[in-house]
Length: 330
Image (tube, rainbow, N blue to C red; front, side):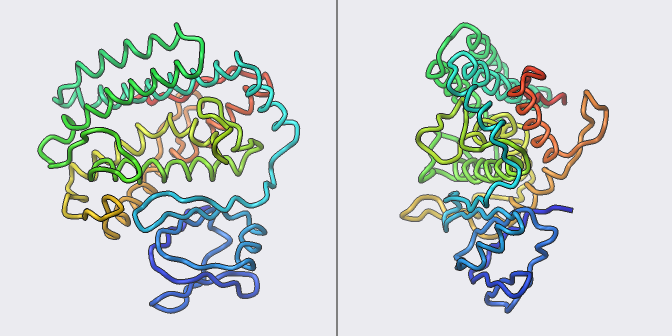
């Protein structure tokens, strides 16, 4: 089964024959390259050209995070599945303002719908969610009244603002507070958790894009002009509330991660290695968790749902079916 390998130790990758091994403080460790789809590096790791050539041959993506848990970048091997036809279709939908806006609005509406699912879930469990739900419903309805992507982005930002303010009620008594959204560096522990989880989701979506005919450089809500990859950011908006945020609430609520797992540093808030490992283990378990798909009636994992979302985009670009974002049913 394809898996994601997380490396927290410091050391170096080396190629030996038809495999690679990691050399760290505990010695040599050979990697199961036939079953690994992507490697996420969290420690201080060195590698050379021969290693990158091998990863490219095996179609293994490499993502790396810095000492503070910030996502830094990815080695995205030569695309084996990309097709010129699909890239042209994606470009057509990007260059046509109406087609691009329609897709961008779908991403915002899908994210809003899943945000509301999360808030209603906790509202049904005694948390005071009425005000943020009402405000987000009003904002979501406005997405049908605007006509430009900057207006959509403004609405999306307001939705997120009301949503994040509800985190304090959900996490009441934990000591974690939201404050305002801050990224690099995050101003507090909760912002550090959100940024770390979101970065993991961005890399997961990128890994699934690699297995399709889609070009990750062409996004619709997030502009394709200022960053190398943007389609993964678009699709991640749909899954962040139901995967990352629910996971944060669970880990904090069960005291798996506490305030003691963070330290203030000149560069921002530093999460302990133990907390990052706990988060990654729970995150991977969440992606493996299965739900019953309402159309096919089959049990599918959350990781598979991401891939299916990308297939829906392919069909949209080819004119087979209009794209409709996934919305959780719980």
